[in-house]
Image (cartoon, rainbow, N blue to C red):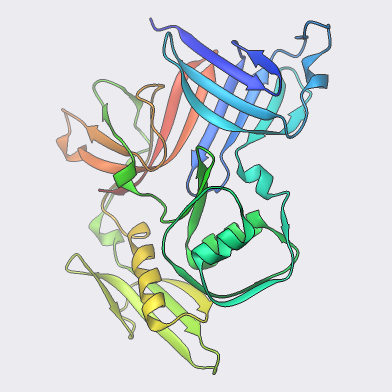
Length: 323
């Protein structure tokens, strides 16, 4: 039986034991979170209770693994300390700092995504080419700007290794592919379900109002498995976004980037596996089933929930679209 191993640093404190840890990581939520549970009565060398020492904004690093392997699964900051039994240390990744940064009186027309972010954020970035059009903000945090980009422009943002990524929800060329088998390392796959072809009648619909009051309106859908954009409604399940100041070419590019997130065949849902192989969102899960080979397929990973502690070391992996 494999022996669990952990190293957790909170501020100047170091722990090689823990009651439980849960980490949630996804490109869909902008902020990765962690909850660390520690015995309520532990003290430091000066006999001070840990709950009185740990402070909001303390840096946090969580390394987990099976002996002798250790992998860094979370880097961030303490966002809250809950004095229960056990003590709960609530943590957020680098996005926590963006909640503390306010932008005042910022306004530009025909703005690119890179301009918007680099004008207001000085850290390292990885940004795709995209146009966001006219943008005006005042006295809002950077985190709310990124949330607006996601809700209105379908542009996802997340941190990985301290780098702010913004644009595509995932880039499988930069991720790894890991193998998962129902007969070997999938512990529970009951929540996976097959997406039927009848569920694929989906249309990405965009409207952009121009300065002269006119509007550009486009519809993007799959026709014979090819992404197609037209200016008349082809029918189907309409998913609409409304944005100001985008040209027809920019709106078309945005809709064609968004559509694959709405339309795919294969399985959806999640499955539970062991703590290894280690995966991150954006990686690819190669799923096989010897008894039911129709389940076989490659799927982009949307999110990973990591649980470590008294119950063992597990990952709950949520699937996105098939590859």
